[in-house]
Length: 322
Image (cartoon, rainbow, N blue to C red; front, side):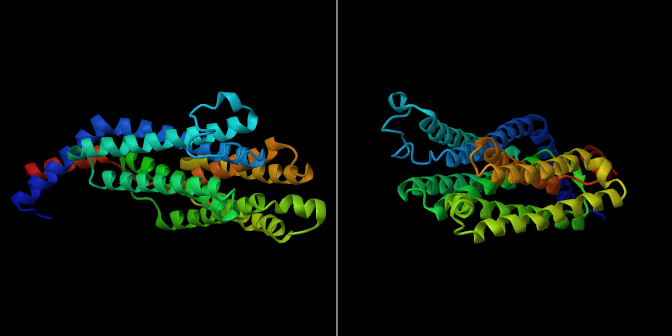
């Protein structure tokens, strides 16, 4: 299609802007984003450990702990878990705020969507911090605890999605139907996590196993594991059936299968030990976070029809010259 002169100039400016972004700033945002993903997963796991060890109110005030940043005079395992959970949350907030500030400073050389999406992340952090405060003020109200975890998962999903978008050096021609299929196990895993945190925050597991009371949530959690497992196994089967899907995504898909087996095993062991072994419960929470992270990463990946962006850049230059 023939372009008029001004349209060609605008296109050329956008391409050069993208090249400057790729060479100067992309690696900075990728490194900060990767650190943020690790910190978020650690935050979710430490939050699970805090809940398992009944340390959610070990620091009676907020945002400080016993009125100080480092409560050495009151330090024990439970205080340390709650204090470290808040410290990690603070570091996650700093990382996201740093990315937002850098995106504003460098906005002239960045894609227009980047500062906007980082501002959304900052908003999510503010909401998450507010829910964290309400969780302490409301003395670990079950709904506050549940919202706190789901907001952490939303932050994790958004951060990984941004990282995939930033790290994508190729024109994405991924199959839409494949991405839609991947959304199913992702949503089911989020729902299962919601049921799980309701289960732990209402003490329903111990009440059911010890007194045969409030077993509905536990039974729902166990039954809902079936569609989660089936959806993941279906994804694996489709990837093996369709040519090139599995070879180009085998690391993620093999990780999904191993995590699924591990998650089921840890769930059974947690129930068999009556939740008295924290390592099983915490591992169960870690696996859930990793499952969500890998499914989100798979959704954002190119599947197999890839075309190098540098080749596209050169072809446009040739077209402009002609």
